[in-house]
Amino acid sequence: MSILNRRARFLYHFIEYYIAGIQLLGTEVKSIRQNKVNIMESFCQMKHGELYSINMYIDEYKFGTNCNHSSKRERKLLLKKQELIRINKKLKNPGLTLIPIELFIKGYIKMRIVLAKGKKTHDKRESLRKKDFFREIKQSFKLKNRI
Image: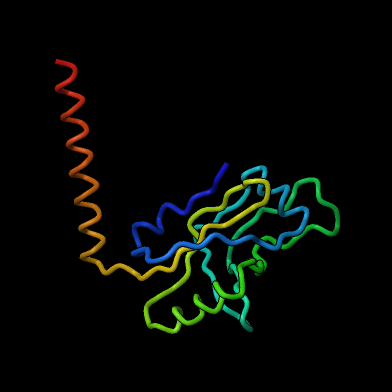
C-alpha cells in the first residue's frame, strides 16, 4: 500500500531521492493503515538540524480515545546524520525544496522525499504536450491492433 503525491511530478523537477522513517503516534499508524492520509499539500523543512514533515494530513483515528493525535501536526523524519547535513547544504541553494512524494509501508511506515526545483510555466506546458503525445500514440496503436 502506498499513498502518492501525483501533482508533485507536474510542479517540480526532481533532483535527488531519499527514503526517511517517520516518528508517529499509535493512532496515526492505525489511520495510515486505513488510508486516511493526504500528502498533497505537505513539504519538509529543516529545524535545529532535524527534518520535519509539515502540513501532512493524517485523519484522527475513529476509535481513538482522548489521547488521539492532532491531524496536521509536525512529524519528525528520521534520516542518518550525514544525509541531514547533505540535505541542509543543498537546501541553502535558492529555488530548491524538499517534497514528500510517497508514503509506503514495508514493515515500518516510510516516506520517499525528493529534493526538487519548481518548474516554470513553459516547463509545465511541455509536460502536458508529452503526456498528450504518448496518449495519442497509445490510442493509435490500440486502433491498429483491432483492425
